[in-house]
Image: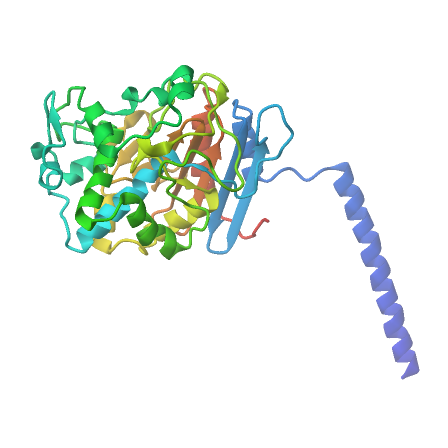
Length: 398
């Protein structure tokens, strides 16, 4: 019996020594050959190398959450990008607005075939604009033919305009009035992106419910999903909580839209902004993590009934240069591994985001940058989201 115990003890000692030797050998090998960065980290660094100041990406699946950061939280500093930093999500706001409208449709309180004139009499008139010829569906689908209000907003179009009017408050009625200075195209004639569509959608939400767009988004989406870092800031110009600074060069592509502008450099700090000019169309503040939760819930059927989710995800050709199609507040974007995913681009003065989810909502990916970046920034962001939604992950990173 004692001999058996000795043999066991000798075996334990031998095993411990062997483990120690192997650990030392492994550590030595690791020191000699550093483990390469994981694919998400490499892609985030590639986006930074296109000219972005800061980059953050998060990818989620049922059993994993992976995050990566590159660049800095502010120019000419070593401050790292904040963990779960908040940022202006720009036109990704449109998916929230469309979700509220479709919830109201599902409740029988309005129809997608209702006209703008029916809910907002006299608001859309002049220069060929006629609300009686435009349906709610066409607003959400960007087939209304209405002109975009963005060119009429100085703070979004030049550094001087930004400095002069970054704290200006707009009413939705004032914004639509500015857009009506321009001529319209024929409703239903084709896809043409316009922020005016979603300002009107926000006004219709207010008319149908008797409560503001911001209140309805909060009560119907933000609170039920527990999106603790997501807000509708109204006229408040600052971003509360952890966030990186944003920079705009006021070159091609600056603004809230989903166009293919390439940016022209880093530009000036534009973090402070009264976002009232983007009510319904681009004013929400959120995080990559909260956006992932939103996309997962939306595509997973937790926010809309099947009939309304089908309406949202029924798409038409929109941006052929990117292979994109567009539904109701949601874009359909091709995946490099075949098939497609649903999501939205967002941009509002220096914060640019791409994100979305697989058709069943089980995998999501969001990436944002804090400047216009360079010519290849947008494509690098699209590549990251597509590749990550195609990837299978089995582990969770902190």
